[in-house]
Amino acid sequence: MALSAKNDVILREFDASLDDDRCKELEKKATMIPDRLKWLVDGHTIHKANFDYKINMFPAGFIVVADSPSLGIVGMICGAIKEISLRCQANNSVKAVYIFDLRVAASHQKAGLGAQLLTEAHRRAEKLGAQYAYLTVNGDNEKAQRLFTKFGYTECSTRFPVGASFWRKDAMALQLACANGIEIKKIQGQDAFAMLDAELKGRDFAPADLQDVLRSDFYLGTYVASTGDSFASVSLWDGSGVTTFWISRFLFPAEWYANLWFVVGLSGIGLTLTGAWIAHVFRLFAAGSTRWFLGYSFLTAAVALIVNKLRPMLAFVSIMIKNKDGNMKTRGRFFAVVERGPQGMECLKAAVAHGKQELRRLGFLAWICNLDVKNGTRGAFQADGNFVAKLMHKSFAPAKENLPHTSPDDFHDPRDI
Image 1: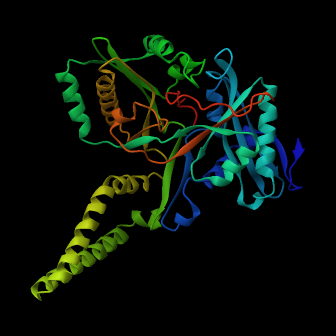
Image 2 (image 1 turned 90 degrees about the vertical axis):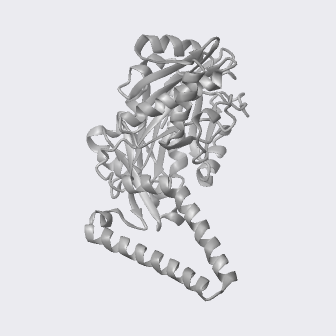
Image 3 (image 1 turned 135 degrees about the vertical axis):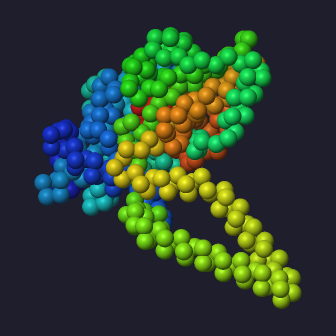
């Protein structure tokens, strides 16, 4: 045990019988939504199992909590221990700790508690044999980035995840695959492990316990596409199996949208304002005010285009507002992307399209794939990036400073969330 910068706080091991609900409550208050936007939209994570479920998916790990007798859990940090491939290491592998869920309550921020939690996590990781640490931080979280830099972390990959709700272009990719004679099949179990173990060998962050990843209940299979000497595959994961998300506010509190009279009233106001705007534009036309009519018409068209562009996002938000109980399958996750050969990209587009069909069939609302910004397979997913996240790493060996960037084709472990 160690006293923190706040005298009433003790760092200790997570106790499932005491801390489960309190850790979930602390994480609920930590969202990716900037404070300046919370008047417009807000939400929080929902755990569908015990808080320590994520850490138990790895070969070893720990959870450290900062306990205040007067306020309860005011901070926490998790560390997952595993053996991974890493090209910058002499033998291309290393025992690593993946750091995640570093949280500090607002009441105890700016008091050095985050630094103490990170120090304790490093101490425990080294005690468990870890020689290397890595973590993910949001691209706009400058405060956290400064903390990690202070502890010797450097950026090793810029992640720009691609993702979207489901759309019609996938059918075009499937038709093209048939026309090009691409064979597509789904594999699981030992067949999937044998193929992926060979294809992913040596990739940065590929885990030594890959077989355990593929045995998880959240693994949904691997789609393989091939033609001639070209080959591609992509694997699927239930990205909302352990945690999901509830949008608790979008302009108004989520509970209001469950009230029929509120929805009717809001719709009525929207239709009334739209009708008044259209009537005003026609009055300008009837009055011969050509310049004003053209200006308002252009503005109307621009707003219509923006609304149409935002329509999938607004539809997704309207669904997530109803996810208070956490039962919805919010998003499926693509991982372990493989592509090679002269028609490798065509094969990958076909495999991805089949994967999207499967996720949609299983009831997922959207999909995501965590890829480096320079990853050459991004185009196969036919979607834009959503947000920027930085992968940062450090070595516990004193001589290992300024580690090189990892390769753009690095493996994203779906458990690293």
